[in-house]
Length: 212
Image (cartoon, rainbow, N blue to C red):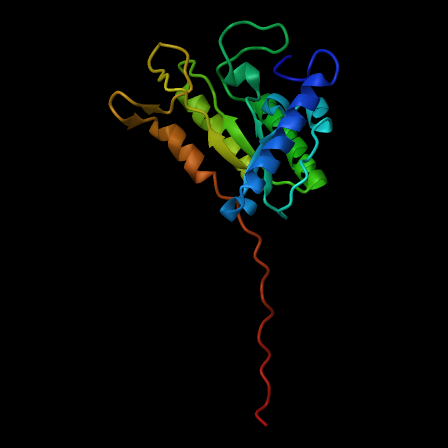
């Protein structure tokens, strides 16, 4: 198994798809509010890799329009991940145009898959590891959350409790649990970009008529 597509065969896909179906069936069978409760299922390792999405099977559901799909997104990994060197992407602590382009591609892929399956998709994890670069992380979140919002995709920020500051490195936390302080610039970027602009159709101007 890998964090993207399985290295061999379809056994891992089949296991996750079977698990999702068993989950839906089990919850619905309990009745009551669970008969119509909104349920969330994952792809294999919550990946949005194209091969993973192609092998995802939408569970059969006795309820209509009460299923959602979850994926996790840590793209662009060269920015959001560790400082350790990897051989498949340049590691960096600044946020630039190439990163934005990668995010756009991810959001398009997720949106297209949502349209194909008829399932709303949420991003159940996203975030960037601290590399003494809070301003760049704020820029990343602003762009990422806005790009998702424009596609109607809701995001959940991953906070692992490890609060990076100063020259220290590592951790995805945006709140310091020791003194209950937030990384205000990052939080502001998240909140201010989390609402998509609704499309409002203008009403025609009323037409004056002569009194009868």
